[in-house]
Length: 394
Ligand code: NAD
Ligand code: DAU
Image (cartoon, rainbow, N blue to C red; front, side, top):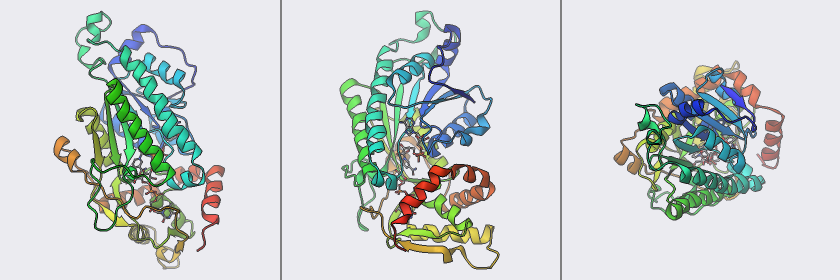
C-alpha cells in the first residue's frame, strides 16, 4: 500500500496507460464499509484501487494494513471536496469507475454538530460530482486503442464515455421512519429524512440523480440498511456494545430499546455494490438489505449471549447485567426495513450471511482483534464518548 501526499507528481505516459486499464477510484475507503470493500475487491480482482480518504476520526489506515506493499492499492489523504486534487487523481489514474463511500456517517454526531455533515455529504458530493463530470466529459467516445494510445489486445477494458460509472453509496435512512404495519422501504418510497445525517444523505442522493438527468453522468445509487461486521468504529451500536461489555462498562440502550433496524453483514453490502457497479442500470437506485429486522434490545441481548459463550465473565454473571436504559436520541426513527427485491430480481444478488452467522463472526472478530479496538480509542474517541453519553440519564 502506498500513502501518497496531495502533491504527488503525474505518472509517466507509459505507466499511465497501464493504470488506465486497471483502476477504480474509491472515496472513503479507510472507513468501515469502504475499507471492507477495498479489501474484498483486491482479494477478488487485480484491478487497482486509488483510495481517496480525508482520514477523519472514522478513517483508519490500520484497517488496510494487510495491503502494505501492495502496488494495487494507493491511499491518498484528501477531501472529496478538493476539486484540484480529485481532478488531478482522475486525470492521472483514468479510473473506469468511482465508488463514493466518503461521508460523515454517525447520526448522533450529526445531532451534536451538523456542520461537517452539510460540508462533506452535500457540498463535498457536489464538488466530487463536478470533478467527475469534468473527467467523464473529457473521456474518449471511442476506445483508447483507436487513438493509438493503448497496446493491442487490451482495449476492451479502457474507459470510454459509455463504460464509465459513478456509484454513490447511500442509506435507507433517507426514507424516514416506518410504523409497525408499514411495508418495507421500496425504491419508490418518497424521501422523508429526519436527522441532519439522513437529510444530508438525501440531499446528496438528489444531487447524484440531477447530475444524471441534467448532464447524463452515468450514475448508480445504492440505499442500504444498517451494516455490521469487522472494522466497525465503536461509536455505532454493535461494536460499542461489544467493546463496553468487555470493558465492564454500561451498555447504553436509547429510550425503550424497541426501535427496529434491518441488519446486513458488511461483506454482503460490499458484494451488492460490486454487483450494482457491474450490471446495474444507469440512473437507477437499488435498495440493499438483509431482511433482518430486529429491535435494538434484541441485538444487545444477542451480543451479550455470544460474549457469555465465547468470553464468559469470571464472576459467572451475564454481560446482560450491564444493560442500562438511557435518554433517547432526539428525533429517533422508530423503524427501518428494506425491500431488496429489485436488486435480487434484476441482478440476482443475495446475502451470503444470515444475522446469526454474521453476528457470530463479528463478535469473534472483535475478540480476536483487541489491538485494532485499542488503537481507534484515541483521545478524540474518548472525548466523543463523554460528550454523547454525559447528558443521558440512566
Ligand atoms: P465511516 O464513517 O466508517 O467512514 C467514512 C469514511 O469517509 C472515513 O474513512 C472518513 O475518513 C472518510 N471521509 C469523511 N469525510 C471525507 C471527505 N470529505 N473526503 C474524503 N473522505 C472523507 O462510514 P461507513 O459506515 O463506512 O459508511 C460509508 C458510506 O456508507 C457512507 O456514505 C454512509 O452514509 C453509507 N452507509 C452506511 C451504513 C452503515 O450502516 N454504516 C449503511 C448504509 C449506508
Ligand atoms: O440505516 C443505515 C444507517 O445505519 C447508516 O446510514 C448510518 O451511517 C449508520 O450509522 C446506521 O445508523 P443508526 O443510527 O441506525 O446506527 P447506530 O449504530 O448509531 O444505532 C443503531 C440503533 O441503536 C439506533 O436505533 C440507535 C440505537 N443506539 C445506538 C447507540 C450508539 C442505542 O440504543 N445506544 C447507543 O449507544
